[in-house]
Length: 470
Ligand SMILES: *Cc1c(COP(=O)(O)O)cnc(C)c1O
Image (cartoon, rainbow, N blue to C red; front, side, top):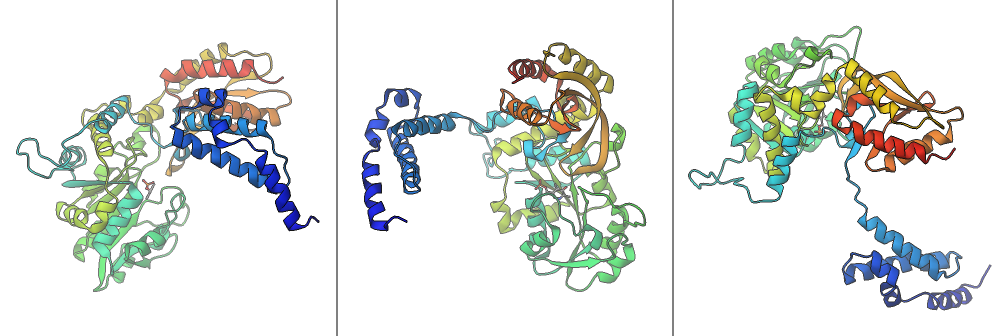
């Protein structure tokens, strides 16, 4: 044990041996590597020196070389862009960890144009009067799904929170016990309900809820009936779900609004694409939901957004609630949602929207692409093969549903640690490639790779496998 005062003295002399901020800032290699302002560079160097002093207190020796290296590493880290485009070869189409739906080229261009310029967001060009923030999107949505009005907010979690707060604060909302669910990290229906100030009135049982259950639960302080699409799981067996249309009848008889959290935002019917049934936005409006809520970046295939659509009077009430301002969408988002909706009204959604292009890629084309890519991949260390896989829609949409797909599998006799290393190096390449490891091999699923990315994928594979540690 050292005497504390003695070691303080030792530390002070070790600190004096450290290079000064000025010396590090004027080091030729540091100056060459830095694009920072003098103030930011000074802050960064001070942080590195602080870390080093902490290390000295913990027993390390002063090391000018290590400090210089740490400054250079910190400079490189500042330059490295985290949100760079990567290739999603996971086979999960709407991959939340990879940013959900990639938007169409036209949508991305509309978003970039709006971001870099002034736009008449709340000024009517014709009259130069204030207003009209949602006019364009409302018009497109009316054409597309028959909703009288639409409000776009930050995301669907915000749409549900805001709608409940505006419609039911301090009052009861009737929900089936089977729908008091958790959807993805942090979105638990009972918690959102509590935050909104509405009171959850659960009816029925986990597996069976009937129209009569809702009817019996309606009380003088009931504000609404709520239905939630259980996006990320499926209950099968002895199950009864009260359909939306039937629930709309109950709501109408009770003179209450019916709120439906549809989830995926799908406009196209997944059944037409070999997937399971899911209520589309149009069906929700036709079935009589007063307000439908959905995400913009799941099966709608647009930017992150929450859609609140339906009855005009209710949408206006929701838009006037104080929370609406806190969760409102910006010009970039609105430009992106409008551009995405335009693909639908033109009838070109499945040709233009990446999510739907991925869903509709043909199995035979996938196989031909995999065979072609493999031909350009060196085969000395790793064995590349075309394999059948199952892709999923993901993003909490269509649970349990799979799409037949084709992948490139990479394996070698002694995979183990080498497999993790290969997966890591692919993720860190440019562009990064994200696959999945299963059954002792790395699988790159081509259903989530658009054909225009094949060349880049092949190049990254060729480069990465050529430098693989044998
Ligand atoms: C995904 C989902 C949400 C949350 O939507 P975000 O856009 O991620 O905020 C809420 N409800 C349902 C039914 C969902 O599927």
